[in-house]
Length: 355
Image 1 (cartoon, rainbow, N blue to C red):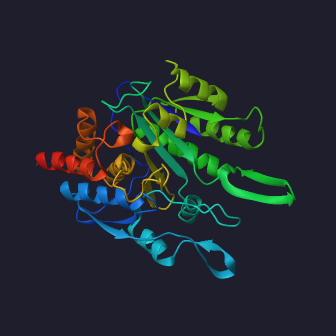
Image 2 (image 1 turned 45 degrees about the horizontal axis):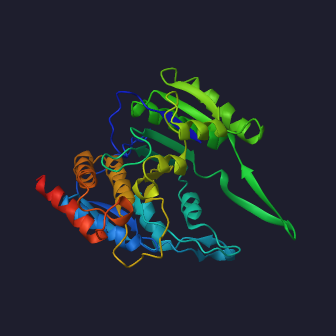
Image 3 (image 1 turned 120 degrees about the vertical axis):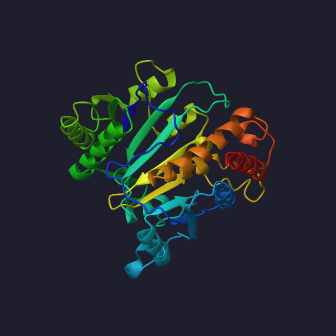
């Protein structure tokens, strides 16, 4: 896990993202693979599509299902039509996916990451004006290696009652994520990178990761490099120490109000990127028009910036934040009593009023 310390001059924009090697996208209508997901996924995906239409974003959607199927030799894989769509379009937007808790069934999220080598998870966490939490003025980014470590998904039964899980760390993946983090920091006016690790306990695995971070840091003298134990990071984040500006993943999301308002992007090595809401499928409210689409919408804003559509991104983001700040039309989890459709309609109205 790598953390980026903010610059005092950095723009407080949710989901600002520049790839270290940005792709060039056409200026016309661009096709994005849409993976609605499960539970509330279809509802919040519909909300995003309506807001994009109101904003006249030059995006057309190609909807695909990614429920795993068994391929040759019994190997789990995503459906061919979904892979072909992502290979062609390169950009995807994904709602929450449910993974059956059954022996042998893969995590759908891990399967997507491995299929498209989505090695860098980028998660900005920025306080939202008008949405009160115990913490204020949070502005941070976490970058996590997506394909190794605990995300290797390698485990097996040794004997009855004993299961072994393998944490895989390689030089190449460690170097790659470190280089991505430093390039991201440089491109997004972040002043420092902090490598978060447990090399004091896992001396070989986390030790390898830490060595690669140190090596890469030598090539980025303009970016301050620090290293910190995971335990200390958690403590500093929860105490909001003035000397430490960010922590990790879901814990950081809690600082700004939870996963329901936190965007996320997964960047691959071959030009593929999938942006997603990282909250659950919420089956208890699915189909009841109660879901909050903010996380998926802000992930879609990240996607637009990744594609170079900064004007449309800013318009949608501003409309979303204005709706939350005014507190008149909010879903229940945001402190209101409005429906998902009403929240969406208010954002659409604001977007259209900007024209």
